Image (cartoon, rainbow, N blue to C red):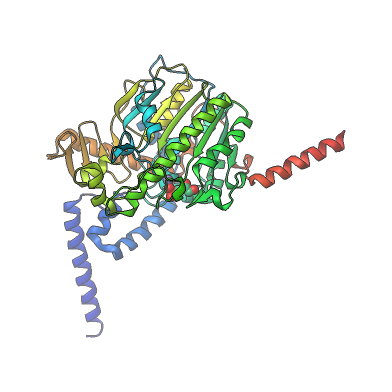
Length: 509
Ligand code: GP9
Ligand code: MN
């Protein structure tokens, strides 16, 4: 009896689990195979079973690197080469060897552009770049594609045209992988110097490790800035002093440079000193949403000041300048408040539409195209830049396509398997017409597109889990990045090194 009872309980448990899993699989096929569907796994199987599933997955992914070989790489290579979009001939190489200034707008969503809060523009400067400027091109249907890695995912995507991981942050867990990043390529091909500017401690998101794999030459972290109390809020340095103090460092870089300016003030919980707030808060039931407008205004002002200083420094005219939003700032916990802001209910469909972030680019020698409606995402930035510099993107393993190409692929996968095309959005198991927001029936073409999106996500995961780029030689002259060539010792270390160098020179003399 004693032995039979537990056996019966276990058997009943296994049967119940099997039935549950069978029903879940019927409702959502390949539930367990689609590793990016975490929310659904928890929903159907419960948190406890998810934990077990997750442990097994972790084990599987850590063995993937050991088991991976160059055949896996070939499958990925065939896919990305096939997806490739030929460049627009007129623009190919138009900005070769120009400085690149990349401006990261923290937590900035596109609904802010041209939005008026109580009749007042929130971001007048950015609006002026979008509306009146004849040198910028603005992509109004551009989406972030990040997941839990947030800023780090955006950085990974923009510089590698790979997806972040379904869980956690590749910056942290795949910090020792081999990469063939945009900075590494342009350094080898066109002798760029790569730098990141960010008023936070260098180890956040494991940046001081993974940047070595990306061939970042200089990392201007918080030690390079005046971090006294009045200059700091929330996560780190305020954006205005950040941009101000960055100018001399920017000017000191050997040219051409690729400079990544990472703002920080417009970050949850969106804090600004009262005397620096130049617009009222919104008036919804969410403090987060209300404050969001004040930090957005602060960021906008800091940007205006930076543009002014860039022009004074002489760097403005001859540089590619691009501006992007990294990810949402307002999560779906605030849907009710956001309904007041956008004037309609934030359904799952509307929430997906809110994942637009701005992408603006100014290319010396190229007329701005005004507002462009192409559907696109962060994945597309790297191939676009490569082509502007005259480097063939097809040689590399990139999941995005050139934004200026006539052949640009206009579907935007999100990390959770949802995606948006110019006509419809797939959210969860449902499809919605973009025009009407109404749910629509799945067609054969939609089904194919869903499979394609899932395949693409899985291939990108293969690259990261299998560390597959170690098997890939993009061009004959490509030299794998050696992380030991890079070191970020902070300002004090740099000062010491310079002093020792001076001392050595004096001794020699
Ligand atoms: C931290 C900053 C914020 O350095 O980049 O990261 P996030 O929380 O947005 O991922
Ligand atoms: Mn961020």
